[in-house]
Length: 430
Ligand code: AMP
Ligand code: GLY
Image 1 (cartoon, helix red, strand yellow):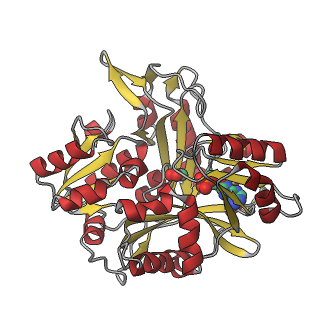
Image 2 (cartoon, rainbow, N blue to C red; image 1 turned 180 degrees about the horizontal axis):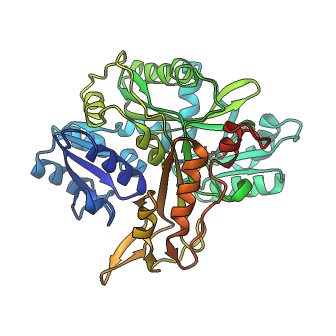
């Protein structure tokens, strides 16, 4: 099978790495890819935003399947364009990707489908902000949650105890021409569950947990994600099944009933609150960095799963197999991330990291005069595996510490609580 993967991040590197492990292994192409992906796939100089060039490339290569990684091309209609050209595509249409592209529309779909989520108010004018906050947080006794309605690379959400800061964020989003979703605050651990859908059927992958804040102990600003782990030893055993039944399937059904089949990954971002599971957000693609750990644990063939979904032939009855091993990903970010980042710093030590048994997935890296340098906010993910989370996180951390990047930073507490919990020590769950 010949497969083209669109994107250039650590998520796409993880997808390609896992596709390359299938037997027989597919012929792999990437657009544009990155220096790490180039070791496993032929990289083509086509940007993820250039839909015309993507269609031309996929046609020239006569690929059997196109897998679209990032949200921007999906929301811009890349899957529609490729399908119109006769290609088989894993990734939702622009209409279905609105689940990620518009938080207010996602809320509307969830309400229609009876999917449990935080109560919310959509605000389009400044005078609606204060009454909206009073509605979703009447006692002002929990943090305020203020979200930009559109795509924001994980940075459009502010969760704060400070009402003035909440109002200021809402005003800034409105001033920039967007609308704002104000939400009830959800407490409890967060879970990411990727559900594969072919438009009607749904198969879930293994749950993972992402760490969104920049600094240890969940301090600092929100980021695109600083690390992840899987499995979740503290989560209920029937979690994936419950999410498919109460969240993913009703959502896919609701979209299908509206004539908007969802083909691709329905990423369910969930909070396990005292009152039960609630959706925090939907994304229309694999998550980053959760994909780096989830795919590491997938034992079933991967390309046939994506290909079946893309053709509307997903087999719900055939369960997926998972490795018992745990996986932990630690993201190495550039100086300054998630604010203004510095790029062009030399990256050293990748071989030393991999000699320890961890592996490196590239994100913001580039080759400059023969040297590997940083070229983005999240530079790479180091993934460690082990028979338990403690072993996996120890390896991932040793791996990231073997890498040299001036000003680079990473979190040292990825999966720490879950590993301690699994070992029965006092620290407790995430
Ligand atoms: P989102 O982009 O919607 O996933 O939000 C980013 C992060 O903000 C989430 O991973 C949560 O940590 C936090 N967050 C979003 N919505 C809520 C909510 N309603 N209650 C509490 N935290 C939230
Ligand atoms: N891990 C968060 C995201 O992919 O949006």
